[in-house]
Image 1 (tube, rainbow, N blue to C red):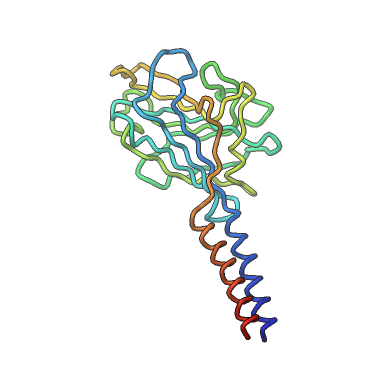
Image 2 (cartoon, one colour; image 1 turned 90 degrees about the vertical axis):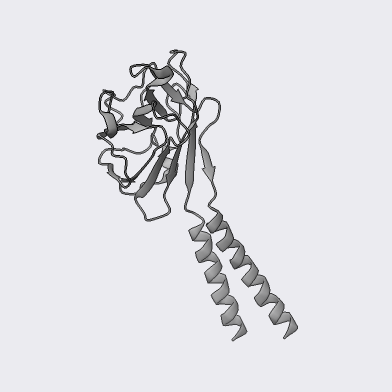
Length: 219
């Protein structure tokens, strides 16, 4: 019976380790890259999370710290060069709506080059100037779900040929509706974040295995 208990605990531990494989990738965008001289009032945080199900990645674009006059019109993401993003989809899941979504396979780059930057692979567009309340403005957060067979959060962790990570276009800078800038993560590369819940489950499994070992010795 003791052997069966140990085996069950060990299998549970490996199962918990599998949960820990879920990954969060985060970008902090505030470095101006198009020489416009403009600055953001606060960084933009982009988070990609593949914990929910295979082939889907939740994306969050946090503009909560920016001023209402600032609004994003596009986010350009890199993708694993060993994979093809063709067929990837995006579904909006929050109160902010995207206006267009498209991917650029390695054979084409039309519309996938941020100002002054190299080719990117995935583009999410938002309402432009003059769209009023439909715009994605400072103080708001966008949430959506990207889907593609085999998709992982780490597929977006790559840099472009010019060394840029994700690049965001933001307008309404310096109180000018037409004033815009392009912002990437600068010297800070994309960061993988270990989920606290997964670490807790893994630690619980280790604790259970140790507890069973002590019970066996005391018995």
